[in-house]
Length: 177
Image (cartoon, rainbow, N blue to C red; front, side, top):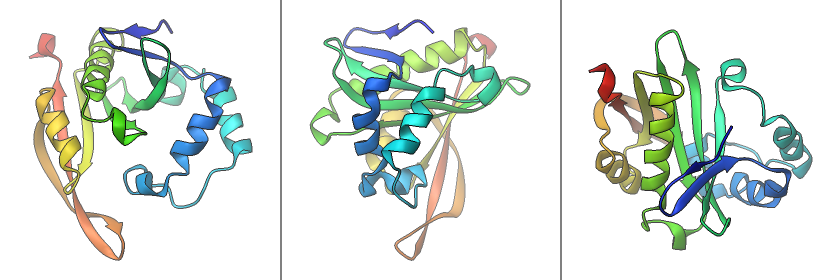
C-alpha cells in the first residue's frame, strides 16, 4: 500500500520499528474501554502481530495504519475493520496516544484521508464508527467530519460495573447517493 499523504499527516503501513509505540498504546488501560481490551499484550504477541500486519484487507477484513506527522513521528493509529465488500461498508476506529497531539487536527485529517481511501480504493458505500456516549471528543470529531449519528446501541458496553450506550455514526460515499 502506498502512504496516504495529507497536508500535515501521513498514514502509512505499520513497521517493525512501531513495536514500542504499539506496546505503549495497547497496554494503556485508559484506552481499554474503547478498544475492548481486557488484559495486557506482551511484546512477543505484538511483534507477531506486526509480522502479519501486511496481510491483504480482502483476506483479513481489516487494515491498521500508523498516523504520523510530516517528520515521521508516530502519533496514533487508525483502523479500518469489518470490511464487507458485498454490502460495501467498513468500520473506522482512531486513537491518538498522547493528549498533547489531540485536538490539533491530526484525527480530522487522518479521518479525511482514510475515508477517501475507503470510498475510492475499496469502493465502499459507507464508513461507520461506534462511539461511547460519554466520549464527547470523538462524537464532536465524527460529526465535524460529516458522519451522522444514526443509531444508539442501548447499554452496549460495560465499564466500571455500569453499562453505557454506544452511538452508531455513518458517512456515505457522496458518489453513491
